[in-house]
Image 1 (cartoon, rainbow, N blue to C red):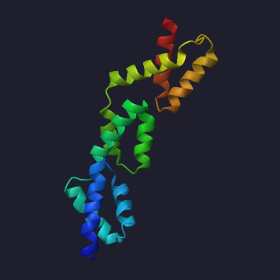
Image 2 (image 1 turned 180 degrees about the horizontal axis):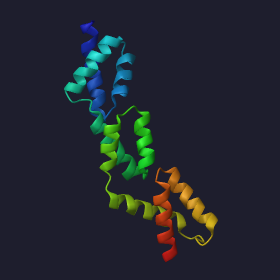
Image 3 (image 1 turned 30 degrees about the vertical axis):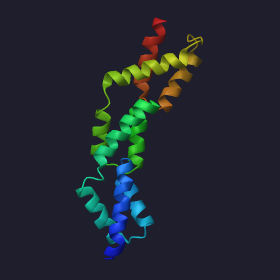
Image 4 (image 1 turned 60 degrees about the vertical axis):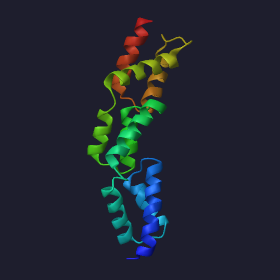
Length: 155
């Protein structure tokens, strides 16, 4: 092992993690980019995990909350993106459970209202377009259609 290269790489990787939450894969890629070999990368990553610089559960929760609150993504899209980042099923489930059901419903309702403002919502094509928009944002189709029917039939 080349400890002369590992120590500065560990410091750089720790600073990389302090800036924002990172996945193990992102840190692993960073360590490889810094010139470490496989065993050195795994040892350094292990140390960063034990020192709590890298925590995938914390990353998943922060990612889910950020995407939901800032980008108004649904649980399906958030789960897919976390899976793409190689996050464990346990961490994904925990992150998605952290999204409050009432906030989720309210967000769906506000997105429907925002999309339907100033248009004729009696047309089935308009309802289809609103549903497609929400489903593309990662909301569950059955939930979307239920909310569309209750909200737009009240109008």
